[in-house]
Amino acid sequence: MPEPTSPAQKPRHTAGSAAMLLMVSALLSGILGLVRIKYVNYIFGAGVAQDAYRAAFKLPDLVSYFLVGSAASVSLITMLNRFRTAGDDEGADRALSVVLTTMFVVLASVMLVAAILAPQFVRIAYGDTFLHDARGPLCIAMTRLLLPAQLFFFIGSMMSARLQVRKIFLYQACTPVIYNGCIVLGAVFLHKQLGVYSLVVGVIAGVIIGSALLNTLGALRTGLRFRPIIGFRDPAFLEWLRSALPLMLGVSLVMFDGIFFNRFAATDVGGLTLINNAKDLFNAPFNIIGPAAGTASLPFFAALFQQGRAFDFSSSVGRSVSRLFAVGMLVSAWMIAVAPWLMDLLRGGKFNRSNAAQTTRLFEIFAITLALWAVQGIYARAFYAASDTKTPAIAGTTIVVLSAPLYWLMFRASGMTGLAIASDVGILAQTATLAFLLHRKRLVSLAHLEFPELGRAAVASLAAFAAAAATVHFMPPVTTHPGDLMVIAAGSTTWGIAAFGILLALGSKLPAQILRRKAPAAKLA
Image (cartoon, rainbow, N blue to C red; front, side):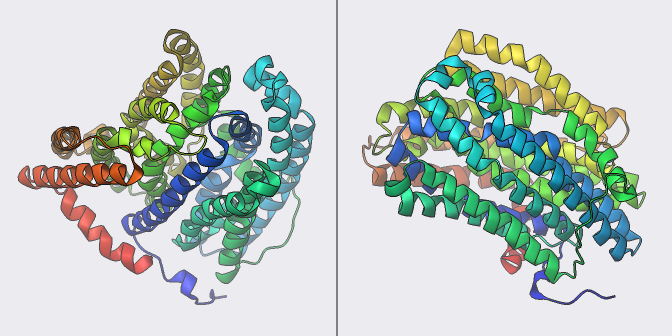
């Protein structure tokens, strides 16, 4: 039975054009995210309410991470891609129905138990001091409200997997924009009536509308025939479980980095807010180049591997890593050069100049490893595309176990600055380990990295940083947000001219590649 034709099916393009669409989405979402951070800081500051709100996400995120998380969509994409390659759309729809329904029952049951045990989790995760001051009860209450939101996120991720297999990314591109938009609207219209709970209302609305509802409508428009089937012994569910189980049991620094932060930063009121502000602001540019490229690449990598095109698979991953690392280095140079003025934009209301300065220091340390955070996602997805979820799970778990003492030691030595440094060391170890294991398993050769291009990008990054830093250094001091924007604009302009000029002078292909992506992205958007 042919699938119905609809506007939703038109955006079927290459990994590059899909990545550009998701990058545009991440840019819009990032702008909304900055508005959200600014407004939330203005209302609540670095204190009890925001500390409790940020801490309330950890138990829901952990339950989702271990039960489904990335395993849900990653493993399902690989399985559905096999059905689609065989032309068995009916089998694919039945498999999706079984996995979604069965895991929904499991997830709902565990969420109920998690809600009961929320106080015990808060004690373990944040310590007795946090539990017994004003933050503890508030965190427990918000945790219980946020737990059901993971059910809707799960539905959305499963439906999104079906769309990704069909090279349709438009719905997924809208998801983060709607999510951040709902949180901002919740804060604007409800904070006087509900206080910090207004943010929770926004989160729940964003997940229901932006993830579950939107992606489900998209899947139905492509002809999905869903029917609830609970089947713990169903062959499709067991196949999915075998692939997903290593990801469920294994852990990754991508998740536990934040857990380590929160455990140690919770010692002082406001610490959670400051370090998470720095990480959120780091994630704004990271989400534009990292997850977007990783998400877009998985179905294409999986198709190459399942077609037996080993050389093309290896070279495609190497090329993606090289380009992403090059872009990451350039963006890091910009972030560090203009960091003080970016962070000063957060100042206002209950978020004072001292808070902004502390956030700046942490942000600059995080920014050094932007490229590593971006490419580790590509390397992990190369394993997933090859139907190997065990190796990255074991590697990730090992890195987390070895990193835990480092976070503790660095925090004891240098406080939150030490935590940021430990994060950089940990992601370096994780990225290098994944790259080495892919090479050793002869899946992705290190020889397929574009080393000359990486060298040109490194030179351009250093030159662009020097030019931007000199520009902002010689500008007159500013004390207002319009002044901050002027400094950022001047530094960014100098950075852009220097980066592109050096790249062109050295014969880099990167500027042409970036400009070529703009046309497909504009059509998709």
